[in-house]
Image 1 (cartoon, rainbow, N blue to C red):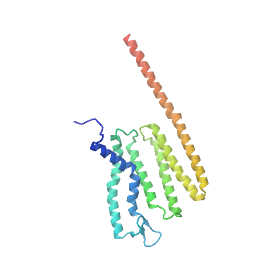
Image 2 (cartoon, helix red, strand yellow):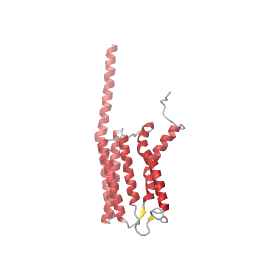
Image 3 (cartoon, rainbow, N blue to C red):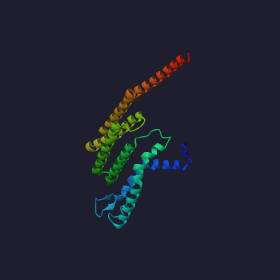
Length: 241
């Protein structure tokens, strides 16, 4: 006989859901970045060496071993994070913010792209601005796409949360744009001014949208529920009388 109770501590299902949530969502960028490091080499001088360990020569037997182990880890971890976690969120009864599984899959791919940009285009030195530009441009494009998709799809079941998600993606996108401006102009003052003005504008627009649309809708729902309750009371009183 199946139990309708939610899995709670110390039930094994509780630990399974908790671990998949942490590994599949929270730690996904960090885990993928370290797995991708096995394929990132420093080509600035000969012999080519692994970026994370300059003692390992690229394409050597030792490096091939690292790449093989990284490939096995990717084949195990990536499918679990991409296809299992989006469905596990609905098994977590405590979780209030739940998203459409297809959007969660897209979100994970976006995290993968950001991890790839930050891994393969990691600056060799502080003056390596070319790799920094590629990182910022790539991350900005991904964040813009996430904000646009969230606006179109509205994936969160709590619709008001979608507004905050769009605001967060937009703010992260704007941070990357401001950093690019600083690099191209070599003037940090302009970047800080743009960042401050843009942050205030995004926050103000978010509050305006929440009050203008979602607050009004909520009041309409509340008034409708109150009117329904009053109508039912009057109706039943008349029946009783």
